View 1 (spheres, helix red, strand yellow):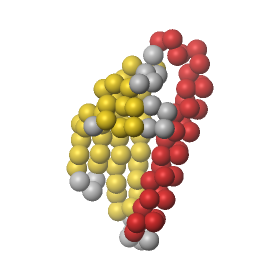
View 2 (cartoon, one colour; view 1 turned 45 degrees about the vertical axis):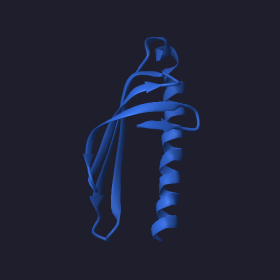
View 3 (cartoon, helix red, strand yellow; view 1 turned 135 degrees about the vertical axis):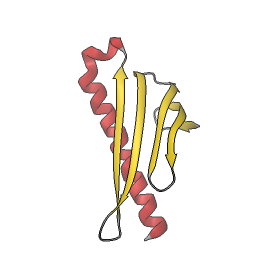
Length: 97
């Protein structure tokens, strides 16, 4: 799929799709190519109180020229992924609360 983000566009290829349990994809191309390789893995697990735990992991290899500023890149990625998760939470609360 092609995902349009606030700062870039990415072409994502799904590598796992277990409905209600797991979603994983690799980024095949991006308009802001900060990483040589990137995979995102999301897993859902039921909680005793009836809620759901989302485990979200991002794995990437930064491009060689970014190693010097990698701490800034990590901060950039952290901010983007945190915002995405907050937006997902708001969407779920509005739709299902």
